[in-house]
View (cartoon, rainbow, N blue to C red):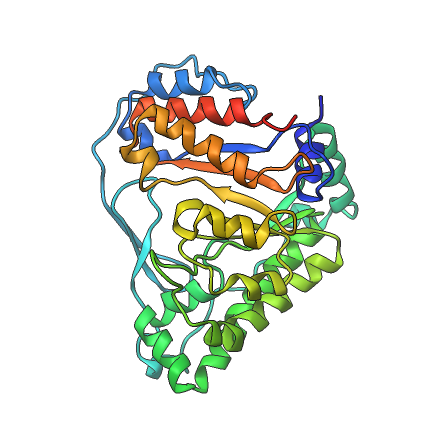
Amino acid sequence: MMTQRENILRSVRFERPERIPMGFWINGACRNHYPPSVLDELQESHPCLFPGFRRSAAAPAAPTPPAQSSYVDAWGVTMASPEEGIAAVSVGHPLADWGAFEGYSPPPLPDLTEDEKKRPDLAAENRREAIAAGTLVYGGLPHGHTFLRLCDLRGYEGLICDMADEEPRLWRLIEMVEAHNEAIVRCSLRRGAEWMGYPEDLGMQVGPMLSPEHLRKYIKPSYQRLMKPARDAGCIIHMHSDGDIRDLVEDLVDSGVQVVNLQDLVNGIEWIRERFKGKVCIDLDIDRQSVTRFGTPAEVDALIRTEVKTLGSREGGLTMIYGMYPGIPVANAKALMDAMEKYSTYYS
């Protein structure tokens, strides 16, 4: 049986993997909405999705009512979340007024830890450990590293107007954000990264958050500069984006992306097949808005079977991932886990 490492590499490289790599992620907020024993049972009964999972011997913590939270991040952005586990969004923008820019200081550039700096063979050591564990050395940027970071700092409307108005100070702000991201990429490479992630939401429910023209002028050049060192080092370049990104994907792939993580029903299974199948590895983000939330277990099973049949190939080029959030019926979560395990060998 192939290790997870070999299987994912074969999938990305179209080298006939043993199975379609499947990932199931349970959001932390689920612990406050489902009995812990139910979540534990789901994981224990699906060893292909949760290899080695064992429930804790300690008594599970009782669910707690959702609690809102807010904080100010290292960039001075005020972030707010409706409850623990749900990603925070920006609600206060330190550069909403360009008048604050001259006195603004970004956070210090990221660097290796002092312990890492003392290890001359850091990358080789990490690679050996990953190979022994049958996995990869993962690195990359935080979610929302460039476009969304600019949105956080200026506000979405302000940023889009900056692009339309060709605001000259925007270039300096992009350089500031890119310098921070470049330091993160450099650290990841020094740690031996083999897989570099560039997660950034660019799509809305219908259409992209910015025009293709503005992407090409302001964002794509930064993407290309940030991806080039990783690509030159032989890393697999992975990019995630929620939303409808059909108008942007040509530029994303042209930037160097080798694995595209995009939402299934928002972009359309047939469109994804026509654009990517057999050409670029598809990391399919399984629906969380429609079938898995409001459908029946049978419909959930049919969705996964259809997606594998439409996008899968014995040669590889397909991986799939699902994020479980509060509100998904337990029966549907189980049906989805069953289907992901069952159809992961559909082409074996």
